[in-house]
Image (cartoon, rainbow over all chains, first blue to last red; front, side, top):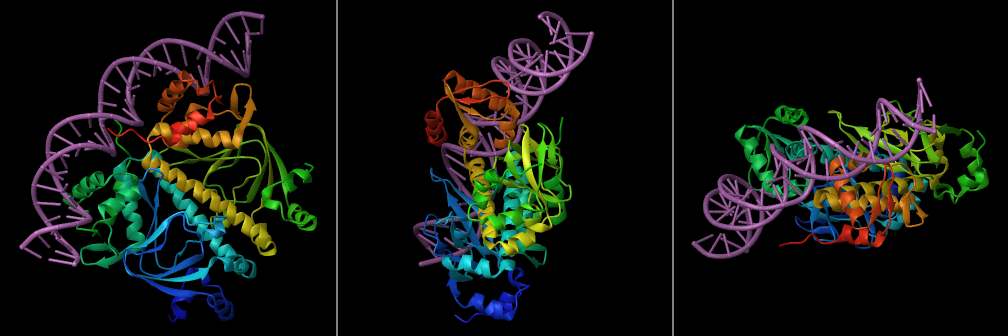
Length: 233
Length: 233
DNA sequence: CGTATTCTTGACTTATATCAATGTCGGTGG
DNA sequence: CCACCGACATTGATATAAGTCAAGAATACG
């Protein structure tokens, strides 16, 4: 598949790179279309490639020993993902599934060390990326430790809005299909509880739901809800 | 303070470094003693230095907007910590407190980019370190999403044993003072619940408790408990 | 159109937090 | 050296948020 250089150059990860550097970087890269529902890699498979999402959305999931599933994160366009090798792992720690038809760029894993050694700047960028993810993970841990479910769901929805909110009349539409179950797996709760919460919010006019759909009507009200002090009595 | 080169060379982070490289690395470094209870840096302070723990143990905590505290992680000897700048942050995201008298090595933050650019290998090492932490964070998220408190506490104690277990007659002693409150903040629960669980375990002979003390007598039994399937009925 | 997901909603249960009281250890200073 | 104080821990009673169980409705899809 033909690579669209302008799209790639617009990405934060490559912003300070010369055309020459970029060319060398893209030489061993392959582009790949991934239809909705298909996995790009699965948990436990040997990490043969690392990826960059050009278009679409992915859900990265993990399954625990006892069969429970959680959504580790959502991959948005421009995000690097699946660089297990860089994290000293031989296999992928999770499964990446296309939530909508998507396009990725992929490199063989073994070019990673060379890349990093020849492009210290890329190394720094990549490190920042992982660092941000670590932060996000800590935020999530903090939320799960200290906050009740409703606030956690509020935070999760707000993050989705920020990363995947497309303006639409009446509010911001989450730009890919997302089920109550998905939200439950992102917040550490059950789809029942999520459903009840979203219903309540819909009653208050904060959102508009639908089958695998979510439209956020009142962002500021949600933000207040997310940061409100739990009433002590 | 005089630097003990042999100790430093034994650390994983520097294992593939030549003496010359190491010298240049250590030139701008300072050693610092931290008495028990004292903070090395505090949440929100500008990130002026990054650190390596040579001796002792640290607890890294974060306080949420509403005043709740959690323990993000425990820093063990040989761990890098406080490299906020590398993660594209100007300030420290948490507070690092000495759980016992400790010794750290510290560098000014602004040498980090130069270090990384001159030592691609160090970059890779550092990245692996962050990667591992990300993994740990995901493990924790997964546990908090899917497991009941008792199993989470079991996992937490087992991690402590692995990282800080000193053999002693009767079992493995956690090598630094740790309170029920601490364990609660590591697992996302309350000190009351932790206390009840540890009491129950003590009754079964799995552990021996004490004021800020923990002796694990039966590691395998704990491991079974941690991985046991929750009984369905 | 019927079949399969996904979602909603109610009734009930339970794990765990909260509230409250008491107990115990260990260091400090008189 | 002993007594006292403050921090830490235990344990019981009660409350409640959220999970589980169960049934049905809405929506999408072949």
